[in-house]
Length: 140
Image 1 (spheres, one colour):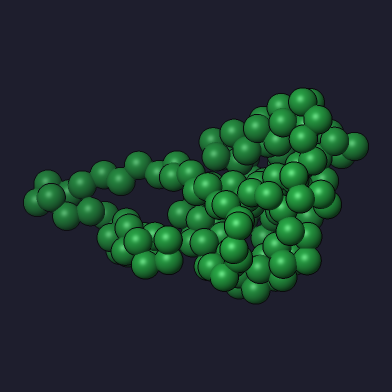
Image 2 (cartoon, rainbow, N blue to C red; image 1 turned 90 degrees about the vertical axis):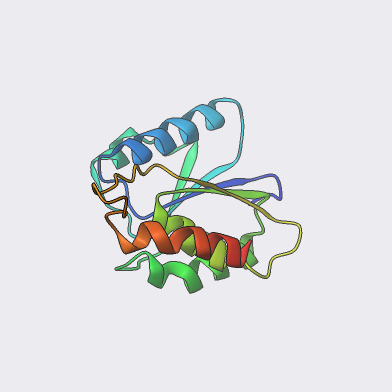
């Protein structure tokens, strides 16, 4: 991997909007000559077939859960030294942020693809929707 490479991090490639967007992004960047690595907590899902294997390298971190991929992801980033990492989805964003915590000169971009609806009394539906902003502020 070159220091100009781009890593995209996702839990898997099961069909979903964020997953489709990241596959499209990886394919388009590869068409323009970028060194693209698609890092997956677990390499599974319907969208794997949509990757041109000669242009986008898929890396399976072999983790059953996204948050257990923090250490393997951190190790990969330390070894390969990519220029930047993009992530999408709440739990993948948190894993990406924690994995890159002590890397100097490394950029991580997190993409939020969730829509939080409110209950009639104004409370949000999930605890995750309240915890994530605090976690992002804590580690950034």
